[in-house]
Length: 252
Image 1 (cartoon, rainbow, N blue to C red):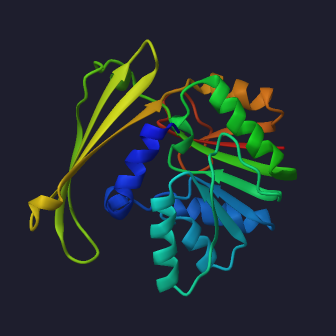
Image 2: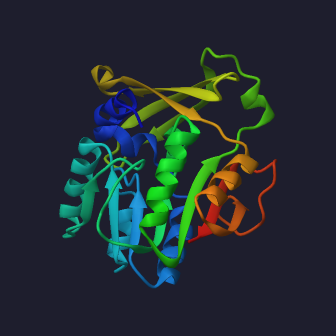
């Protein structure tokens, strides 16, 4: 993630949990972490949506994130739960923690922030080096639909949501997306608005770089991973080109 992308998350940190508020994947990751029977590392742990759930279940888990503001929010949430998480400010493309893990997870499409194969290979090699022998890597990515790929480069409305925060505030989210075929870059714009305090409204913009399924498999193989599998969502059905949310599992 470059400096501009990181700045978005620095600014988004205090409202991140309002924007990314679903819980569809936590049961999957909890089961995988328990089955790992060893230390777990979450890459791009953000404000702790998954990591804190691990810790409350007694799982030996740590996290890294490139955003200091996101980690600050994680610490605040951990304090209310009487938890002391081991978290590190680090870039997924190159990090060294001096420890190896039984499981590394990269949830919620975070891997797609990497813009080219050099960045992806660097990150995958870092993951590989931090895994124990027979340890596993889990990557969640988005496989774009044909309609996604036909969007113009200028962002257009993707989805709208009316939501209520945990403290009872009504708020609205608009998601926009544009796609540039030449660079495989999907540009997202997120508009957050509040009914009670319009002065808190905010807009965030970021890029993801889509990859074909076969290209992800190729990168994993080049970095030394084996027993590579892809699943359709957070069950264990085999993924295909019609799968949108794809979970990759690979062993060192």
